[in-house]
Image (cartoon, rainbow, N blue to C red):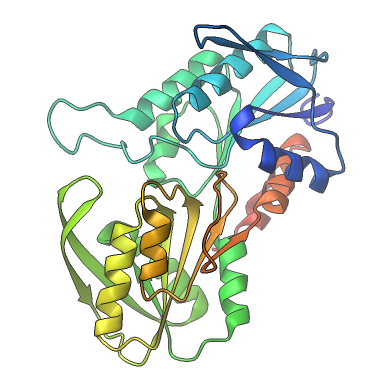
Length: 312
């Protein structure tokens, strides 16, 4: 029966913009759902159509506030209680992923707790994109389909036809991702080494490698305050980089991030629509991941491989 059950796509409130695009790519209508809000702030999601025996895909990124995660959990629970055949959580941006280990005493491992909460709610499968740490897949006891932004970023970079191309990571944690891009694009690679005195504040940064007269492309999974990215771009400019572009899958862009980008030497910042944000900068270009997720959803529904969605 798997893959032959009717497929329906629903959206929670935070990612409705992307869910509608995914449904359009699949030639489907977005499923009907609603949320009842109480005066004290409590809310209750509801499916406004039958999902009995259906493959139910629920689209929601779990970026702050925490209500986004909780709404997804409630929707999963509601689908299971409504006798859905399978419930698949489509999480373009997996929030709390930076809490993937105990980096100091007496802290939680937030991403493991996220996985446990989703499993307890009754999720049968998770489709996500560019996890902050690959090992988060191992926190789940259900299948996790991990898509990569390279599927849309790599062709975009190739179409730029940049000479003297150099790929960079904004920190050592992104070296694996940058190395994959570098090998695929057959380019040079440099790294940034940073020291933090506290979260979101970089104390010192060094560039490892040559960037003089090079067109640099900085690759990252997410951009939050843009402090690291802006500092890396400034250091590269000081070392003689010809141009600096940045690619980040998840545009969190909190605080003064957009202002930092506008003031930085960055020529262009390319992001996806994994989370909604108001673009107030001419430097920021948004590419949609709707087709990539639509392809993955269709493959999961038909019980086919999704490996063709990977570039590298």
